[in-house]
Image (cartoon, rainbow, N blue to C red; front, side, top):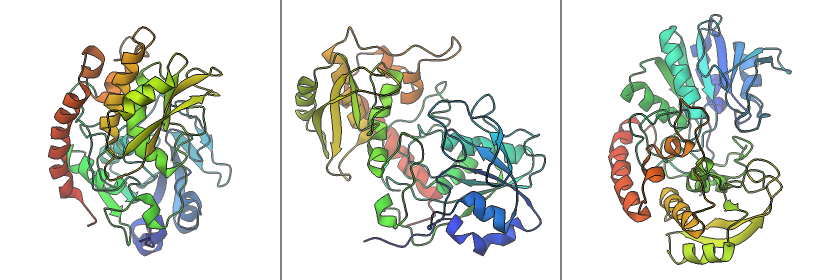
Length: 383
């Protein structure tokens, strides 16, 4: 049953005492809107002394493609300076915060540890602590629900901007709850306030909230994308297209040399829970294999309760490797100082360096997931 969920920004007028006589900085993007799709930038500009904006990956207005550098600029609508947090500087500096008393975070997350917004938030919390600023999170739903946990904990030495803390792929917390966990368990210890949602329940998927969906990034167009993201994002560390440059990114995976029918049969024969595959052909307009005809599979989630994206990722990767081991490649590191992307994505070098058994790895990773389930309950704000 759909509920009338109100997010933190919908309830901002009940919390204006937090902002009295304070200079406000806002970390946000195009998802920072209220229930009527009014921008959080514009709302805080009207109701508080908003003096600075901070841009994560994709920019404050969502106009920058994945991985592209975000530049400092001036917001066209408000005239407020925008400081980039995606580029050489990922953490607010003392200079950036010199005119700010209180730092507000309002971004729609997707419930995956691979999404960079989590770490934009945690780095900003670190700066808030370091420079004596208050940190406020305007809470939003976890689109894939706040119950289920999937995947392994990142191992020491494998943290990055797509996995900054030892948490599993699917962590089952709202962005506000994640902030509370980071602040306590990972000893950030900033002065933090979470403006809770109203009428939200942990078991809700995004469609249950009654809220409008605003794509969090250019390659996260639908709610369905958020469910398969952890299944196919593993291919970012390989020469397999994860569907960037198509209309259904992350719902498909393939490459020019793949036999889609053979791959589909092999995957469907595994009878992975809650999921069916079908053969597809696609030609990316950008990213890997740009303008080349690719073949592969589309993931059709038929039961969200049963579907496990991380289990799917392991089997999908292994079956594609088996199809053509000569053509399949793990991509090299971006620089000599870094590890290969697949290691950061999977939280260790096990997948890259061993002839892994997908089901055995998944069962081992489930131990991590169960342990995290116990930890995360300490930070639940909703039942």
